[in-house]
Picture 1 (cartoon, rainbow over the protein chains, first blue to last red):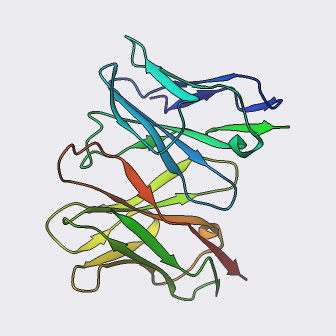
Picture 2 (picture 1 turned 180 degrees about the vertical axis):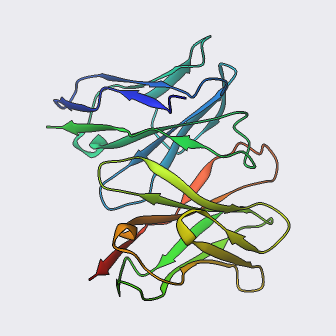
Length: 114
Length: 116
């Protein structure tokens, strides 16, 4: 079975631009979570979606938004990019999104803002 | 608020030696606890998790961890290090309380170096 897939793999953007990152969960998984991992740090929770509804949101500005589609894939959008948004963005999927179910992580999208 | 502290950002061991990666957490309710491994340019892979039951948890690749409530710790161990264990290791906690969103709070990570 295919794991969690993310696209693109790498992305270079300029300050002020907007970016869209995509994630396809494992087949049968209804929950997708997004994390930001800045170099040298642990991942930080951005959003969780379950059955197309936002279930949780981390401490990120409104420039960050996300949505989940009927096929459970998800997009993360970041507007007005700042240099500090440069990071590895990880997507994780799970059956229900609850704490007792394992979350499976994708390989991530490396975003560089110049 | 929940938090995770990993003691030692960098740990170096010789091949065949004991691996010990330390993790302490703070949580107002008994949490779920996890250890993830990240190889260069890859995502995170779950090594093991504690939810309920036995406090000594066995995971993949010979790793295990023990939940000690009195010490609020969840240290990761492996009796004999292998070169392929060299990676970044993250301890994480998740709130089983209200909401139960599965949101993971990660520590800063520990880089494990294995010397031949």
